[in-house]
Image (tube, rainbow, N blue to C red; front, side):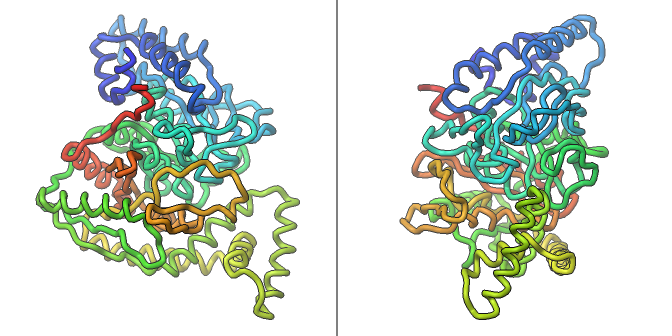
Length: 480
């Protein structure tokens, strides 16, 4: 039964539908895995097992009567703790947010209506704001491939739970790589949908009860296979989306490889893994060529303003007032040629005026128009999901953190934003798939970026690559 927990969701559902296993039995297997491994990795933060078992038993009873059931009927799931779940509000790692009732977030409600058995929440950084998953409320999540390293963030608990078989599917979110980074670090799959395809209602941040759909952020599926991503996306999408579709044909697939930019650092081992993948695609008949889809300077300038102004707006009023005072200081120091340019840029972006936001938005739209031309030349773009593989825990001051590359070079921590910025700023779909492990034994992943609305295209390409080159590999903690 322990091995069964590592099957993908599609295989689980086939077993459930054929009555080779029951929903209660499958839930118990997931909980047993949780009890055995969660003390080591701390992926799941809270559980609701009594109600989950009641729901699983009810689904088993309906199945004996051959009653039509939803596409996820009987499948045990956990949910990232930035999404409301009935009885378990989205804390986002903040204790004060626990003190309120909660109904299901929009995407969670759809999964539940489809028959999913939701039994727990997974860990994340405070207010989803880091590429490490830790907070004072629930502690630190460890990477199942190496407990001294983080699983990524902000959907880090979700990725760790998937990699270890604690859960079969997850719903996470992404504004700064929060689906793609953990998938890469833990060797699983994730899909950042086209912006607006999946409702964000019930996601925190922004503040609980917010009705407006946030800029940049998306809610999306995580899984152990590409076909499972499509299945879950078909359930949670706002509008028709096919649950099944044939994989892309690698022969003749036009692939742009984007892995070289002077101001976007990339670990040499990660770059070598992408080059190996590109060569293998060429051998399978794909038309592969290197591309530079946009100018990185304007991209990062626009994305930084769009992102940090959004994050700044979500800060407590006292923090916002402090940042506005700092803005005045920065402007003064700039006028006399003093100050750290990087820090100054962050302060200015965090306190952007409406006019500055409009300028950034105009730049973003122009880049989006350029991407339409790019996707007339290639079907998909393959790019790094991160500049590095999973790195050791580092909970020091955010702006002082650095990342160590395999050649001994250190790069700024904020380099984690570079490769993910294009898809996020322009609202493009991006499917994260594992292609590792690297020479150090750790997983690494790429993102398959497509045109706006081209979610089916990137998922089809992901499934084709999975079939051709292999997919999910279980971490060594499961054989220890």
